[in-house]
Length: 275
Image (cartoon, rainbow, N blue to C red; front, side, top):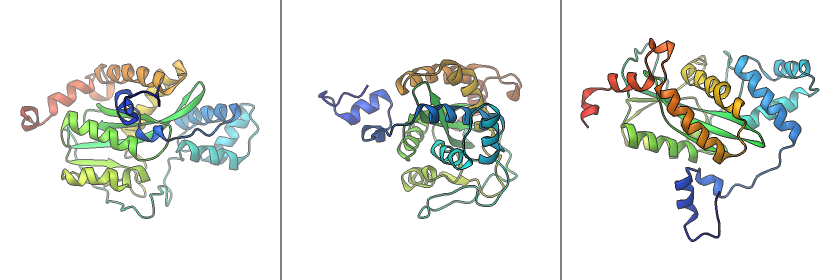
């Protein structure tokens, strides 16, 4: 995929392939076949029972014939970047040196495109490994504005997805995320601050704030990723491109059988449409 002997600079190759720049310097650490299978099962269990912690997931794995310790399950969950979704203190662990912004969506009526955008990251299993997916969604329309894949959990692929969304769709009033270090990083928040975008971050007790993206993760995995078992990030990228185009054009029951594309463009403020 990346040809280090090619005269084209590596950074330009990554741009053409829509790869995170971090992948240029990443050295893969082998993951055993057993752990890959456990991570695939943990992902399925977490999607179905998002409130389960490592102990309950350990029990679910044992019920499926996999003897594994709770601590190992916890380690794999951290590698995957997932945690139980339920009300408890300190659910998010932002970087200690990063600023955490207040939550701005309480009681807010969100009915127009580009009022609020949201972003989240999920783990994606593949036939021979795994990667991470970030997506940026318009809250009112559920339209997926941009996305990126990466084999590391640094901030760069999130920054690239943000830059693409802003370039294609303009500027939202509010950008909402969890308190993950990718979103609290200065590289990410500076782009928002420079454009005058209000930054909102889920706090304690706000575990359902990104429910629309959680539903997106369920759809993309059960309707695409699990069925196709992608062999590589390049193959996953091509397949997900088709899926997200389909997702934005199909009717959604939650949108009164309208499509995200239709709702987005029909509720976009006229000033932005003209621009």
